[in-house]
Image 1 (cartoon, rainbow, N blue to C red):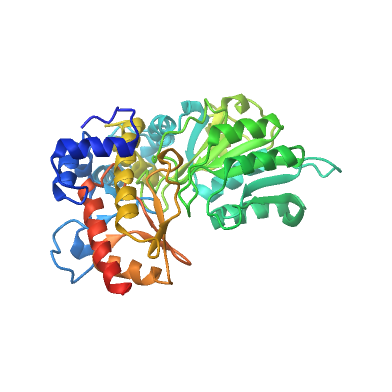
Image 2 (image 1 turned 120 degrees about the vertical axis):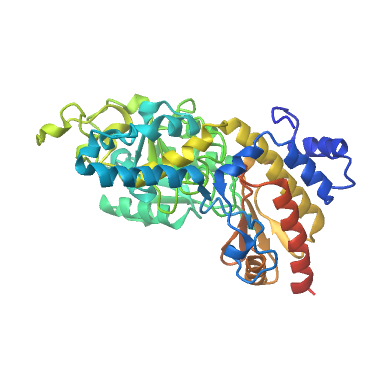
Length: 461
């Protein structure tokens, strides 16, 4: 199976159906055909896949693999993570504090963030000097807003932040608190872009209209790359260009985009971005996060920032002087020395990404999620479920968000969990499923749909 074809995912799937000789997309022969010819199939072996018995004690066939569609919330454990973290524990035991400079595995702790910088930059379309691996997601959002949100309190000045109305709550809390930190009121200084009445998705033209109308008073536009609830992939380049044309700073939260689909932060001229690494980047719960600061801001040292010693010039960092001299680029926004163990965990996951490319992962993802979308659309009544993620593959990543009707979401979620099928629920009525190309198979998609059909027949009677 070649992933480089440019035809639409549905057309590709139909072509593969003919080649497979299967009778329909529900025929196990089709899923088997796709998995056998998947050029990325070996990557699944790089992960620890929980068994059915581990995810749902008492289930039948306990030694078989569970169906894990929750990489949008927490990615599975790459086997390399265990090895590399264990090496750091060994180094700690053998070397103690000397490990900062002398390291048997070639990763002195004083430069540990550099081991994950270059590959991380590739995954978000950035230059290495534009990326720093540090802290956690919301802390990094605060760090970036502290530097880039500089509201004017003068009449008619820029003081507003534009964000999506249903942003992930932590982003909303952070942005509101930043506004208050400057002595402003979110009621006056926060614009929340909501979908049109009766719709789940934000229309790009509505976002651009808001920017055109209020751009003269907007200091920062801050959206998520992929919306956590609906799975909508925003038009980052178009929105960034429009906002900057009105004089706004533009930042993006890539929590659900990094490792999910290709982005080009440098080429799209994004001002700043941040992301976590425990979802599609598989670095483990609470894993270390990342920031992007475009190179045009690299040497703007007059822009105030929250400073810490790890952002200080590394040549004189250990001279312990009290005059802060920030490093150029994103590195100058660092605070403390990064966690070695969480950096090592990210490094373990990135060794898997080094075996492929984000473009090839995206190609498989288009087919894998396209297959799931086709089956859900054709096998279920809209009286049972509604897919609120965009139907256009170019406007989504791995994730499909399903609204289950008639107040049955929790019953469906719990019923799937008892069958060792793992998604995640978002109240009041959505379950999110994300077939991840690094470790999920077409067989997983088919078995999920077949089990869901049985469960729906039981619950919606």
